[in-house]
Length: 142
Image (cartoon, rainbow, N blue to C red; front, side, top):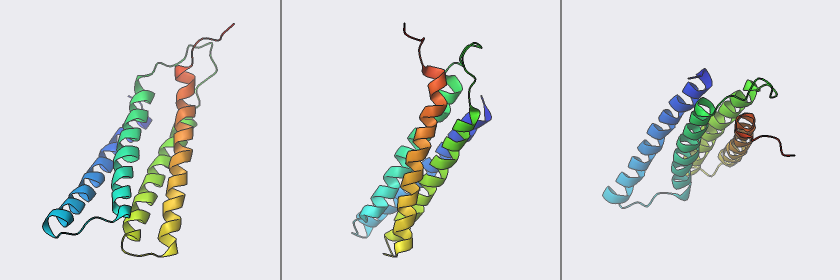
C-alpha cells in the first residue's frame, strides 16, 4: 500500500472519530438537555462523516487498488493525489471548525472559514478525480 493511501485511510479514521464525537455531543444535547442542534453543527457532522470519512476512504482505497497503467501509457502524476489529500484534509478541517464555531458566534471570520473549507473540498475532489483518471481510463477508441 502506498504512503498516500495509508495517509488517506488514517485521516478518514480521524475524521470518523471527530464526526462521531460531534454526533454524540448533539445527541446528548437533544435527548438530555432538550436542545436541538444548530444547523451548523449538523452540517459539520455531515461533512466530517461524508467528505472526511467516506470520500477519504474511497480515494485512499482507489489509489491503492486500481491497477497502475501499462508502461506504454502516459506516466502517473503522483502529485495529483498529494494535492487532493491536502485540499480535502485542510478543507474538511476548516469547514468543520468554521461551522462548529459559527454555531456559537456569527462572526464573519467563521463564515469565511467555512466557505474556504468548502471550496478546498471541491478542489480536492477535482484533483482526486485527476489522480484516478490515468488508472481507470479504458483503451483508446478508434
